[in-house]
Amino acid sequence: MIPQDAARLLHAYLDGELDPANSRALEAELARSAELRTALERLRAQSESIRALADYHAAPAALRARLGAEIGEAGGVRGSWTRAWRGAAALAAGAAAGVLLALWLLRPAADAGLARELVESHVRATLGGRLYDVASSDQHTVKPWLSARLPYSPPVADFSQHGFELVGARLDFAAGRRVAVLVYQRRRHMIDAYVWPQAEAPAVRAGERDGFNVEPVAHDGMRFVLVSDLNRNELDDLARLIAAAQ
Amino acid sequence: MSDRRSRFEQLVLPHLDAAYNLARWLTRNDHDAQDVAQEAMLRAYRFADGLRGEPRPWLLAIVRNACMSWLQANRPAELAGALDVDAAEVESDRADGPEALAERAIERRVLNEAIAALPPQFREVLVLRELEELAYKDIARIAGVPIGTVMSRLARARRLLADSARVIARAAKAKVAE
Image (cartoon, rainbow over all chains, first blue to last red):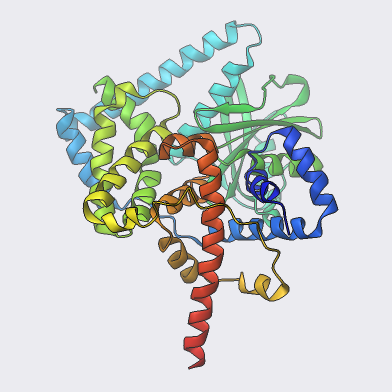
């Protein structure tokens, strides 16, 4: 029989919500008790099957259309104006991003600025539908495509067998220079891996910003910064895979 | 474009799928989910100036409240049925034998039915945790309960789900055998 508090902590442990002290205590308990290990495995399997099999109901097009009409009226903006403004806003956003970038470059090593910039770049790519310039899960296609366009050649690996599928790559602009971005997918989540040579890489701390996780990892003379709305545990898994890749 | 509108389009609208998903799981039908989600999105639009912190939990709290009002008005029995939800103790997890492990290879339909059959208070924490992958603190904020309650409801939701998935799978098997 598993003690009640251990059963309760098991859920928090599975969800990555247990503090380090309790995690260590529970891990010691797990090492001792086969029953507890079975219970954890059972919970993990259940959680995985829910994530893999439960319906995720995306918003129907009809709802989007109704909403667009309602908010168009509420904002007092007519359709053609909306489109014109969208274009102008995109240009303005681009200009603003340029100004922000210049300001950021003038600041002394403030890594929070870069984390923000990378999250913004990731969101722009996701919303704009421009996730990658080259779509391929083949590392032998992606790698030469990147090296032809950059002064360095980032290591490219597909981790499909671990649930992180390489879907493509793109070039982006961050920290004042061009950067290779490898794009991975896990379930519905897109993960951008920004890659710089270690010597030239800007410093970024792991953290969370606006609901996106940012995770730096070093490998093979390169520095990767992962950005995604994927939860921290699974993003850590990808970081470990990258760090251990051949 | 007004400030509020651009704020809404940049920060809130990207989470429309999450809003609909929660509304759909709580109302359990497309038609009402669309109405409730639309009402919640318009409410979010009106209050977009007051948005602080992360947009997704903020929006989902609005959607969740709209769903609860809808349930109160249209399915009061569903809400009342689980009044003793938090009084119930979390059972100690039993370690299952190998045959139970095999049964866990349940099919999609069984799993979806089992989630839909959970009382709404359990269904919402499960959907927010497993499908939206939100942190306990965000779920607590959305459901308007303490983090400890999120933990116990989640534990109980998983327990109930495992039990009911087993029952549904067994019933389906019995039907096939007939």
